[in-house]
Length: 273
Length: 253
Image (cartoon, rainbow over all chains, first blue to last red; front, side, top):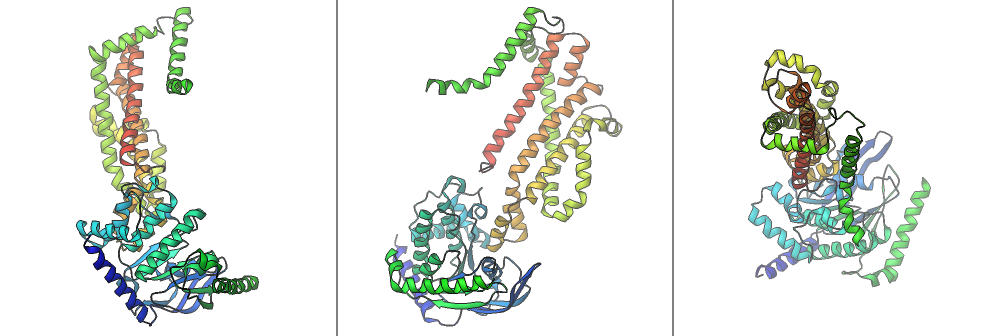
């Protein structure tokens, strides 16, 4: 219990540091990727800003997921360089949340052991693992019985477990690939709030792939709008509404005009076919 | 509500119908009573044989051989299956051999194994282990190969090494299939052991018991031995199912 205020201070320092450093966090240079039938990226350059929540949005098949999969090292790239503060991927800690939580969590481990698994891989002693899992659970104010196995939990709870699993390592950057698209609407709304809460507390650089424009604008500081493949950054939209954002936010003119603007660009890109 | 409660008795309906038809057949003398003794005579012979006669000894002997051959099969086939399954190219290169010998009736191998191991337990156990091993191997290898790609990626993204992915993910992913293999393997091992006990100069075992009772025309004893073999097969399957439910609690969920 006494550790609680210390943890709060640490978070706000981290958040302040994130807010004051302005150099980009991730630099993508000359990224190229071909699949057998199409060129998805051809000499693609982009900078991911530090300490922002960024969404990637674009037409179907334009390579939204492919982009974060390559940044996170899940797919190899054909050419190009991606650096995190000038360092390669294996030097940094990052978290990745899959769309298909059912296939991403380990059904043979309890929720607790699922969350602790990346710490085990890193060689963190068991005692520290328990402390760190309990800390992340307390920070997120999660009320799940962590002794349960994933198949005993609802879809939302399972995805919450995989988000906590991604966060437990204190990642420098968090990737989420359509994390809510397999959940029902009620759960989606709840999970958006959880994600926003994590972001407000940690200001971890976050890259979210979304197929829901309303969600993308509502959650993001920046929205990367991609063209059809080979993907270009059509526009990098800023949306700076204060947090925490609420349902009211979505009725404000700033939100509505940002969303309308993004939709217009999206439809223009879709029509280009 | 009352009807719901009676539903637990449904599995017994078939048994009761069978016993009724059997008793009726005996009572009406539709079949020669020498060939088909009454259910009561059969179960009396079974009871006496199991607890006071040779049937109990034969039963345990068959259990012993089946368990030994399954253990030998598992010890060889599970590690080999994981190895083959972890590389699809490796599996494809031996797939034909596995499928070919899996399709070869193991009973056709008796003469070969007789030459190799002589008359005795070693032959029976090794033929049964041979048959069971191929079934287990095939299931384990497919279990590893069909491991969810996302789960493997998830472990890799968290920094797990190749060995750790194999150990923490692929091995556990293959567990449900491994248990399917073990259950099929033990059933096959029992079949082979019983057949082996019939034909290769045996002195004990359920197969020998059935064969001997038939030769001596002791029909109640023969039926008793058949039922004992059935109970053994069913029991082994049940045993493996309950182990499976305990250790692979996530299977099918």
